[in-house]
Length: 160
Image (cartoon, rainbow, N blue to C red):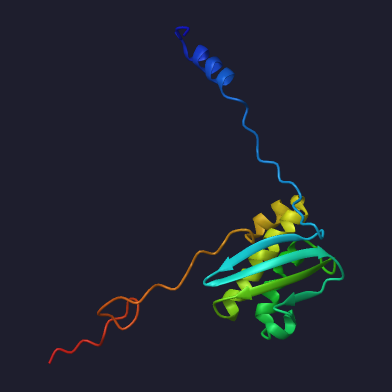
């Protein structure tokens, strides 16, 4: 081992030892049928999502997405990543979702669509990440505690 006497020598020695770190390169991930697959999660809902080129048809659990998610807010949540990536009418999306309620399921499908789009088109990652669609919303319902009415709510207090 050579003796290091200055900060410049130390910097040169560590630069020579460690290989240059580069940002990870994202590549297209497709299955045998040419589809991109991803799993989305929100609250207790889990969605499996497949994306393939098509006419823009979105199917959730075998139904048209407007039938499955009747509320316009949930339909808007589902389409947010597609609109942000400006890919309206370019991909057919098939999703199966289990668990949770309708709001959690819509969030899970949105998360899955975002991840599947990045698997199909890695260059969309920046746009979707900036919109916050690739981040899993980890908020879940807090559990009920012993001696409480709900998670934090106490029973009514009586002085007498």
